[in-house]
Each structure stands twice: as C-alpha cells, then as structure tokens.
Length: 321
Image: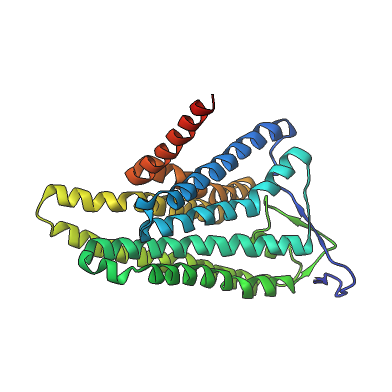
C-alpha cells in the first residue's frame, strides 16, 4: 500500500511520526505513563470481570447483559487500538508508525468508536421494550433477535469508516509525516497531508455527525417513550424499579457523549494544540474506564455475580491451604 508523495512520486511509503503532546516535558513522561497504564489495566480487568460474570452466571443470560458483554468486549478492543502505542511512546520514545500500521489504527479506532454508539442504541431499544412493552419482551427480544441487533451494530460500524480511510490513504504525504496527536486519528492525518484537505475534512465531519447525532437522537427517542410509560405507572415502587433498570445505561450514554463533547470543544475552541490532543485522548479513554465502574457499582445483578465469583475464588484458595 503506497501513498502519493508531495512531489507526485509513488516510490516509497511515508513514515508517520506521532508528536504526542508537544508541551509535555520529558520529566513528566514516566508519571503520565503510569497514569495511562493504570487506566488501561483498570479497563482490561473491569471489562474482563463483566465478561466473566455474564458468561458464568446463569441469571445474567438475558438480552440486556448480552449487549453489555458486547460493550465490554468493545471497550477492550477500542482502548487496545490506541493505548499500547501511547504507552510505548511515553516509556520508550517510540513515535513512529508505518503507513499500514497508521491506517489500520485509524480504521480500527473509528470503527470501534462507531460500534460503541450503535451498541448503546441497541441497549436503549432493549430498555424501551422491557419498560414499554414488558409482556411482549420475551417474544421481541429473543436470543436470535439480540444476536442480529448486535451483529448489525458491529457490521455497520466496521463498514462505515472504510470510504474515509481509503480516500485518506490516497492523499499525498511527505516522506516523514508529523501527526499532532497520540495516535492516528482521521482528522490529524488529513491535516498532515499536503493535498487539499477540504473534501476529506468534510467527509470526516459528515460521518462524525451521522455517528454522533443519529444514535443520540434514537437513544433520546427511546428514553422519551420510557419516561412517558414510567409516568403512567401508579405505584412509586414500580416507577423506581423501572428507572433503576435504565440508570446504568443512562450513565454510560452520558459518559460517552460527554467524552465526544470534550473532544469537539477542544477541537473547535480557540485553544492551544495540546488541548486538542488531550481532548482526543479523553475520548479514547474516559468511556472505557467508566463503563465497567458504572455497571459494577450501580447494577445489583452484575455486582452480585462478581462478588459471587470472588467468593468462589477465595473459598478455593482457603481449601488449597
């Protein structure tokens, strides 16, 4: 795979140099490395615990938790696309990526980001059916339907970024391309090109709008119906129970769109370059860190299942002794 050089030749493939955060002094590299490493380990352990709990505990074999393990697997993949390279950059000063590695990272980062938005929509639909049409829930949300919804979310997200990534790969670059970010984000790579960036910037903006606002609109629509149904429940206990089934998902949606808002404001506002980069990093890390914490702390079934697994392990350890 070769890109055009800025002089028009196609003799060699460019090398991408991740600048990172320009104003971050060397003395802070190691502390920041350990902060990022802690976040990454928290993401891996937290989401792995949720995956294990849902697979092992029969009580969690429901559509709601099937979508949750999709979200957990997605968070592991999403952060693994970017964070290990960030850690390598901070600890080893490894700034370089090959052309193919950079575009693979770009594709996976945006695909998994799209997947998260679509899985959150599917989870909102699941809550809508559970609260608004409880008698039809077993018929509407069969295992086959749940699998089809999750597969559709993944497949759409895997296909959506392809046009932007392919067209960006055909842009002209210098032999060494300086990417002002900690990973190969689409916009950062486009801005580093010596081609006309307007068409690609516009395409990226359109895809971002579709991926951000259309899923958000569908989630809000689902919760508008949920709210209307809950307000018709006469008992206070019934309303509280209905709201509690949605609270964890609402917090996750809030965390996801807050991270998008931070990245967008950091990009659009007249702020130093470092703030733009930090906004992207926050988007890459914030939601995957918060998702397992929210479900482990707020969802009683998940918390009980993880506690049960921990108690089993502790009991097995004492028996060995």
